[in-house]
Amino acid sequence: MRHRFRKIRASAQAGGVVMASAIAWDDTIEAGTSGKRRRFHQVAYTGGLMQVPGYSLPVVLDMAGAVLASKRPVLFEHDKKRIVGQSDSATIENNQLIIAGQLIDSESAAEVETLAAQGFEWQASVGANPTSAPVTVRAGQSIDVNGQTLQGPFVLIRNWNLGETSFVLAGADGDTVSRVAASGAGTGGGSPRPWWQNAIPAQTIAVHTANPQVVASAVECALLRTMGLRSQTEKQFTPQINEQADSMRGIGLHGLFARVLASHGKPAVYERQTLYTQVCELNKVAGSANSTISLPNVFANVLNKAILAQMNIIPTVYQKFVKIDSAADFKAKEFIRLAGVGGFQKVNIDGELKEFRLTDAKYSALLSTWGSIMGLTRNQLINDDMGAFSQLPEIFGRASQLAIEQEFFTKLLASFNGSNTLPVPSAPPDGPTLTPAGSLALSPSNMGALQWALQWFRDQVDSQGLPMLTVPTQLLVPTSLEVPALQCMREISANTAKDTNVMSSMFGVNVSPYMNNAKVTGNSQKNWILFADPNVLAGIILVFLNGQSSPTFESSEMEFDVVGGMRWRGYWDFGFNGAERQAAVIVKPT
Image (cartoon, rainbow, N blue to C red; front, side):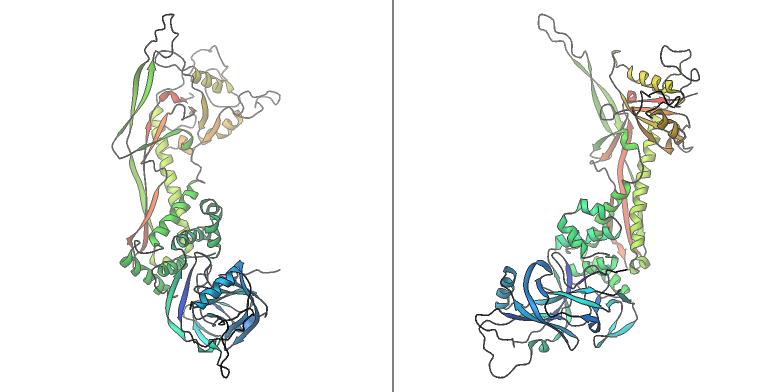
């Protein structure tokens, strides 16, 4: 079996975040020759720790396991469409990867050359293809590699192939350098020592972020992918953001912490306790206002998107039966439906139009706030527990949908209990046959009950005793009637395989355990309800504060501390109210 491992691109692509060390340069350069393509030299990798997109820990390439090819492409910021040149030499000297080659005639090469001539100090970055599984060196462990002793935690790539190198603005290995030979310069007397041997390793850490706004969105996208929501990210983010998120594949909480620190210009120390403490202290001092990647904002945005995805898979039914409205505050809102008396009438020969008098039907709705608080402990955050974080949307999303579904049925069954109930015929009616006689039980062997309810629904009249022309479209039943309801909507009658069911698919079948749950007032194993389209005539109004039809989840700097961990609060402002009683007919079999 052929194994494929994640490629190493040790610098940021557009919008990425990388750690780069300051670099000292020697003035000695290799001379170029007039009329020829200019040469370049790179120290592509110095053998130390690199912060690589897609890895939550620093990465080290073992020089002893490198497979080098002399002729490899040299790119601009790892972009395959922007070729700068081609190497003709790739060697390892003093545990450093040294690349030499020539520039080509391209716009990207010209850009590199022009900036180099103006004194811009390019850095280099290596594009490596691992050929063996990564080895994790844990915190507290150390290992000798590339002529130095490195302390964990980090990821060690023992075997790898050189894919390409790049000219970059800021590399993942900050000690790397790229240098272009000066045009027309003479060699002077003697052979100077190669300039890359004079590079002074720096001790400080600087940070480069290429478009912080894009970076924040890309980090959010990458976190959502880690949580298993790739299909949602492809819909909610642009292709550019999704492409950038690919470079951070598998990012965890610690990867997020490092990028937050980077956005503040702070170095990230890759030891779990220290990294967590750094973020906590930064959050207290700086908050979210001065950062390009705000930890509370990223957490809140990721949670909100993940919770919405979770809410969509909870099998609620309230959406089928309510009309949505909005309120500006928590005061009781009075809704008015205008009803006409008189209507359109035939105009007499004198041309006089009769007055169409308007009356109002009033009903009110009162909003309430629903919510809860959840959090991750200090231990979970230090342990980079993405599993625990991923459960928050599942719990929050489910809890919020259960809250609104339960409130809907509480209001529904209370509003329609004892009103607009289909009367049970006391004698054989002049209409559908009920089996047994007088029974309104929903059953494929008693289709007369469904026909009787349909007729009664259509025969409803307005205040003038005239037909309302309302038509039922949805059937709501308890779980005890789920199968009978589906059988009633079958194409073939349940009584005989030869009979065509004329009511096949006439109503959408909706099932809810709240209809027969003992804790809900008005519950029944036998009752069923027909509903009109709520956009035509609504039996229940669902009102959201300021039209916010989904819960809000947010974190606070004050709730993120070294000892207590981090907490998120979720809240939702909504309220139900019964509206038009003629929009639903409840059937109560005896």
